[in-house]
Image (cartoon, rainbow, N blue to C red; front, side, top):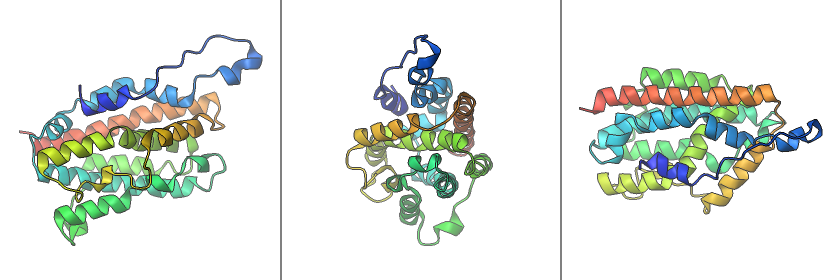
Length: 238
């Protein structure tokens, strides 16, 4: 079982919607969090089985491979958190922005540890990552599109982050420094926070078209992630 599969096992069972009278339609709708989880299952499994991910988690690569991944994360989360700042001004989307989830400062601390004080001029952003970040940058004015990327990134971080951190520490000799991206200091209890996140996600005032758009965009997010892992693998997996 891979790290991401372990994280998925923590998720709640699928909610089955039973046909009901029209008056009860809204209450009976499948929660958006369930639509996102189940609607992206094939893409998620494809991304987690990429050679770069499996090799890194198995300890078969090196610190340079992890550093390269951290550099890509910096570009992705810089774009995502800029989109968060935009969506925060939207009365519908603002409830899904949590300061506790902010990752960019942690990634920058990791890169300074891994690369040195000049990390910003030393790292490189891969073409697939540039495309991924550019797409995220376009989502700050659309709640349904933003939801797809925020859910995909942050819930994944929360679900598997602690496991990934332990594996990186074990295989590559990290202490507290270098892997702070995976440590959410302001979220001492992950499960209650994830429950709150899903509750707010499910409470968003989105119509069926917007919900479907969110699922489609989440699938695209996994495909962007997969393309990024493919390029990382081309560099680091032999």
